Length: 120
Image 1: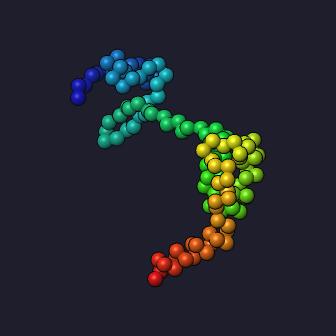
Image 2: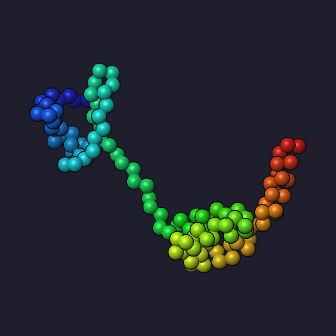
Image 3: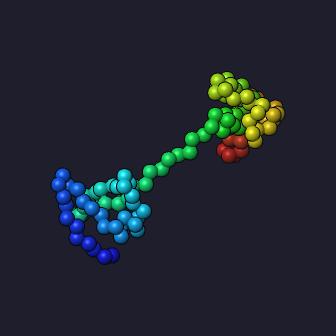
């Protein structure tokens, strides 16, 4: 690793050599992280992660597709409608998806049977 000596200016300003700026893709306004460690001052580029923002339709899809029972679907449906999404027009969600879900009672019975098998 090549070292370079730079001079600190007024108010603590430093100028990073052009070669380093180019190597790390730094431009005017780039964010840097500073850290004092082991008697050194370390500077590295800060990488900000911007999570994807889901559209109301994508959010509605995930709410409904993760409903495990008909009753849970029915409890979640008002939230989807409140987002202004027509559940019959959600891409990737079958129009009759709810019909294939078990009821709460069926779900509970299935889970009880599954847990009894694990215990035995």
